[in-house]
Image (cartoon, rainbow, N blue to C red; front, top):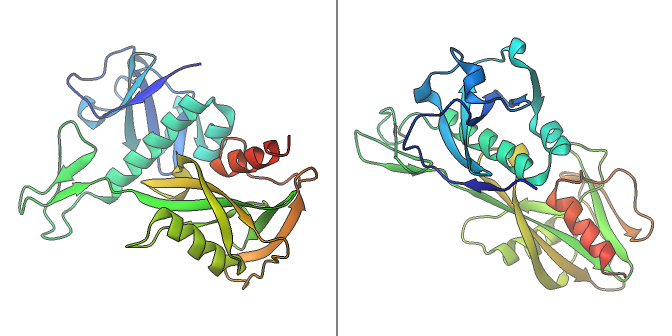
Amino acid sequence: MSRFVPDAVATTPPGPADHCVLVAGRRLLTPFPRRGDLDGVVDDHAWVPLGALDGVRVWAAGLPERIDTLGDWQGWPSVAAALDEPLAALAGRALQIVTWRRSHRYCGACATELADVPGEHARRCPGCDLYVPMQLSPAVLTAIRRGDEILLVRHTYGPTELWALVAGFVEAGESLEEAVHREVAEEVGLTVSGLRYFGSQPWAMSGPGVVLTGFLSSAAPDAEPVVDGKELAEARWWPLRDLPDALPPAYSISRWLIDATVAELT
């Protein structure tokens, strides 16, 4: 399996054999081209370093619009579903960084155009010296187990046909664990116990800088969910040996949590 090592190092311009990820809006060019295949398409100064894939440098660049003659342009969910984990993560990183750079061009304090900080995915204002890092937006989700059942929910927005997990963004001054308890109480009216950290995943679908943190948890034997109809349309307990077909995609931490909960039965 390939190994992707992220960084923000740009000591030299991209070489002809370097990997490149082009982003236009919310679409990515597939398959990922080499720099030598893109002469005249993107200037060298527009490339942003992403890291290295098996020792080969990887760069990203944003285009104002798609150039259909270059190849197939797909959304990140489609790209991630078709690629192994390192490449899916690389594609998500490219989309998040390019989107952040496009939406953070000017200083929020004095409106001066921001300048890149060498060696970082950050910018600084040459007018007032304001430092603007690529800030993260943490979110949490949890697989709630009740005996041999798991709580799955359907949202009123996004892919509403999927049975997913309770999730939400962390609020200011709140720990990850506190966010889990609050989101569970708000969305399904339950109290959970035995909270266990599972893992995390950058999530390009929800915007730049989003990081999902997953937890495993348990509910009381008589716990029954109550939804308010605002964020969730439905919530119900599903037998772990008889889950619905419409589950989150295999590349998502939501699916990893569900699979891990099923695996605990064995």
